[in-house]
Length: 71
Image 1 (cartoon, rainbow, N blue to C red):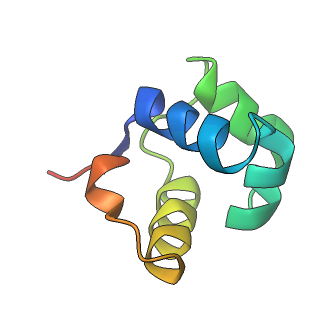
Image 2: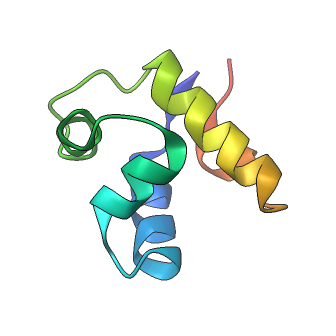
Image 3: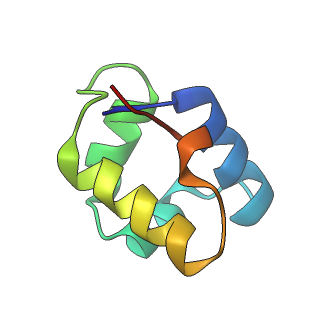
């Protein structure tokens, strides 16, 4: 699994008023770690972030497949 960074940034912009910290808290990951990934300097296949995004999407009736690339 890999994170679709562009779509996740779009989600953060629309649902969290572009506040990455609120999104990080919502999906249960460290704010700095999420920021590193979204800036292209971290692992796009982070299981913790991927699972956090999937759980957030399921909880909010959003199709997580637009935010996660599946193998």
